[in-house]
Image (tube, rainbow, N blue to C red):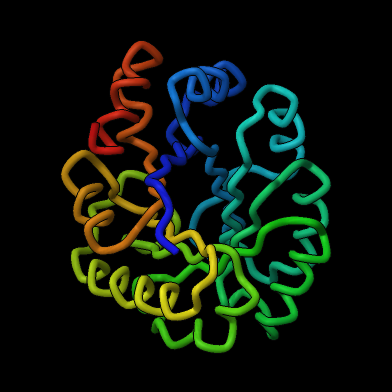
Length: 220
């Protein structure tokens, strides 16, 4: 079931010295979700934030928190992020020994469950998960750092995921993250994406530019 295009600015590109103000500004500018990148310095070569930051931001916005955990092992971290206020918890299928059990855990915590596919992860990993998940995140860069260039081969993967979602006849979000900008956003949507994570493209130009950035990412 294809849904309207929604924009999830990644706070990885925000001004961390004024993070709360940045989140408020993005909500005012028309963002649909706030994307929170959690990196552990192990699964990916970078270290970002923990559940304490998510908890601190939670009272400042009514937007859903779309939390992407690039962490392994991931299961032990999930309860803390759910308690901190995450609405969606997205994990990588190779971030724990039993990904189906991980999905069950996420749903038991009252969150929507997402599966992230790295550029080298085959689409077939979804075949026995599609009935239990709420979101598929196609990574169009290798995870770990913001500002990377879009990997064009992932357009075919977006199409393949779209076909699986349509066949499942479930309301599953198809999200793309990595190198999403004014040029690549339209390619992603045309291939079947309905949720776009954008860091640099959302936060470029400062708060006065945010509304225009989001509108252009949506194709407006």
